[in-house]
Structure formats: structure tokens, C-alpha cells
Length: 355
Image (cartoon, rainbow, N blue to C red):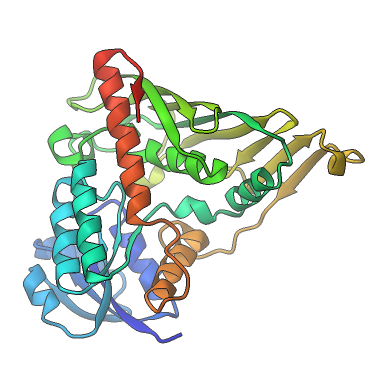
């Protein structure tokens, strides 16, 4: 596999420094360009490491004058990211975008049309798909280890808003498009779709803002979902943990994911040390040992999402040469955006919304 040139656009995104480290540790990336309109943000991002940096730029046109940029990581605030994706694609550059990619599903649909017209890849940062616990759970569902799936439930609770800077654009609806659902809950919604290999057919949501900080997005939400093959799902979200370190990367987490079927259940814990998958099954192949526990040790890798984030980026790079598909595509982001928009509509109307 050839090594390529990559660009990171956005120096102050919560994930910018982690993306930079991922590009630096990848053996598939030879040179890195970094772009941000704020020279101070650029300097801050690069002060600890300039490895592989070929150039820095304060405007996108100046960045795109450089030949040979294979792909760009789009990591701007959500209200600016859609236009960035379109501009990169229009210039012939493949795009790996931060989620949720854009504020609206219609904007994402437009980006997809540009990527299709230019025959370029559009990947999205749903890196948890490659977690070994998630991969194992997906295989077990496909193998009918727990029979027909009847339910899936998840919980994602993290540190309160005051630990995370209430003045950040993430908590401004005009800039972010939504709160904890669109920023963090989307990961668990994506895992539900991915593990079950099924689509959401209807959703209802209750959400509110309890933190007492000057924000205008939800910090607590509860969703009920129906899937196309009949399963019922629930997702509980909240910036609610009272004990935490300050800062975005110092957050505490309380996560849970369980898939239930007629013949058993699968419990996933990707935040434990080590990550654990626990399975109960009454299927014939499991008669001698109906309860099993699988533990996983992830390689230590610096960067966004650790080793699974690195694998996600490198699979995207391989897809540029026709070797497979991105782990998650723009169409996955579009389906996620449709679910999120339906959830917000439900919260506003008090009614279940069909997709």
C-alpha cells in the first residue's frame, strides 16, 4: 500500500489533536497538511509535535493549491463542516468527516451527491464499529446465537456540562444543531443499526436541559425505537455524572449495551478494563456452556479512538485504492441524521415519528 498525503482541516475541534496523532502514527500517511483560519489555533495544535507536517495554512484555497492531497479530515464546527466537505470533494479530495457531518440530513444528502458525482469516498468517524466487542456481537447476531432479536437497550451517561465548557459551540444549537443526542448518542444509535443490521422504523423521544448552564441544547434524553424486523430499543443519554475531571478529554463515562433475543442475550461493555462481552444462550450449540465471557486487550495506540480509530482511518485510506469500503459512509451518516431529526421532532410534538 502506498503512503499518501493527508490534510486535517480544523485545529480547534475537540478531536483535532487526536486526529493529528492518528495521522502521525499511521504508516500509510507520509505527509500532513493542517489548515485553520485561526493561526493561534494552528500554533497551539502543533506546539507539541510537528512530525510529518509538510505545511500549515489559514485558508482552504491555499491548502488546495498543494498537489497530491489524497484525503482530508473535515473537523470544523457542525455549522461549517458541510460546506467544507463539499469544497474538498469539488476539488477532487476524498473526505473523512467528523460526525454528524452536517446540521441537517438534507445537507448530508447534498454532500453525498457531490461525492457520487466526483466518484470520491465519503467516510464518517463512527470508529466504535471496529471495536472487537462490537464486531463479536455483530457476528453472533448474524449466527443467531440468541435467536430472533426482540430488544436492544443502551445507556450513555457522561460528565456534566460544567466540566465540558458550557460556552463551547457544542452547546449552542445554532452551531451544533443539537445536544447530547446528535453529538454522543449518535454513536450508540449507529451501533444499534450496525450490530442488528437493521434500520429504525419509528422513534419517540423525551429530552430536557437540566444543567442550569446557559446552553440551548438538551443535556438529557430518552429514546424508544422500533426496528424494521420488529425489535424494540431504548437509549438513555445524559450529561449527568457529578464526579469527573474537567476538560473534554477528562470526562467520566457510564456506558451499557445489551441485545436480547428469544434464545438469550449479549451484554457489551466497551468501557471496562478490559472490554468485555458476556453471552447467555440456550441454542443447541451452546448447551454444554450456555454462559460465556469474552475479554479483549486493545493495543496501545495514540490518537482518536486508539487502535480502532487508527484501523478506521487506515481502512478508509485503503478504500481510496478500491480495497474495500470505509467502515462507515456518508449514507450511514444520512440514516443517522434522519433518526436524530425524527427524535427531535418527536420531542417537540409529543408523538412517535415514523421513518
